[in-house]
Image (cartoon, rainbow, N blue to C red; front, side, top):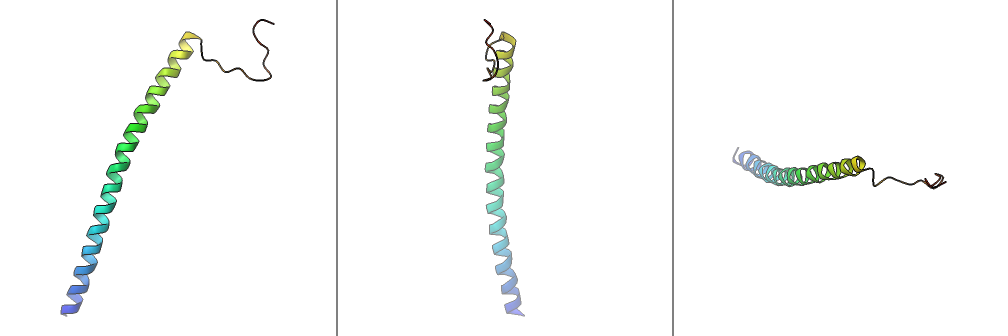
Length: 68
């Protein structure tokens, strides 16, 4: 009976360690997602500003320039 309890204690210790490791990963990913979200919002605002100014248009290779 004692060995069964020790086995369960070992498994529990391993599970707790794995849970702690996963918790750290999730916390790190949350921070990274928040940073990326802010960057995407900033880029979207920047692009909206460019569109409002009428600059930053993309010239395609088969498109005729406006002076023709």
